[in-house]
Image (spheres, rainbow, N blue to C red):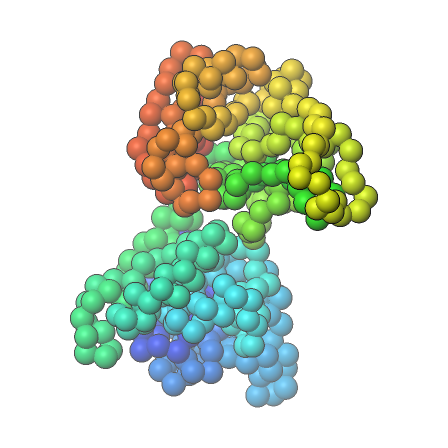
Length: 398
């Protein structure tokens, strides 16, 4: 059976689409999955625990304590699950999820989870189109969650438009596709650097750059989804991941990143250096905040250790990938970096391409090897991560 042995924890919040979960549970069970259901108190107004329990063959919980006084352990529930499906996910529950609210069993379980999370939003047209909902969905994606888009159709208000929860068969197919997706990196260790580095000037100021870390985190998520064990070393970044295959180490400076990289580099099969590492750092760090007393300030800088060059020098079995962000002579400079640093391939970004570079959620890249240049159109960084890893796999199999 297509979902044999998979454990799916379904979290229902209070919307009219809750009745559709009955059909979804039946489909999961037919495909061989185990289903457990949690629900908010408002969800109980739309669908009965008895029906859900009968279909799932498991008790249904909506509070931290059962009627007999037994505590429903949210940590154990989270650990039990292979995935969590938030369906239907109302605007209220979505907002609480991405802003750290934890006032019911559903949210406490969600915040304890280390497994993939799927979100099937369901709300009225204007609520779905509201800027806060759009932002919250973007935040959920930034957390590494999978969004199952709402569909177009008749809504509970009588309006027609986008906002209704995806149909049960659509959700079931998406979950099935996820479990049966390519696990081509199973058994591989992938080392990834992400984000900027900050080089302290004094206790308050630093030299840094605009890197958000979003590209590196997207690559880490995709590698983990393909079965890899991922070591992610990130400079200062607000990006997050709760993927069970990703181990994250946070660093600040280039020297800290250098040290951490070479703790894990030797055992890596693939190393992807997407971090924007500062080339220089202040020779001396002021112990106190520098006061504005002169018209000018001179800071003497010294070179940071070249992490990528050292990775190339120490390369044994690793497939080594670098990144280049250029503003002129892009391909020429990237090819030079490829050769000088002993890379297997380099990913080129140009700041002259609209939608590419730092901070944004999209990127436009060229992948350069010793003999080829492959250009890709503007895509979301999630899709770019897939392109990069697929290209790496093709090169490894040559």
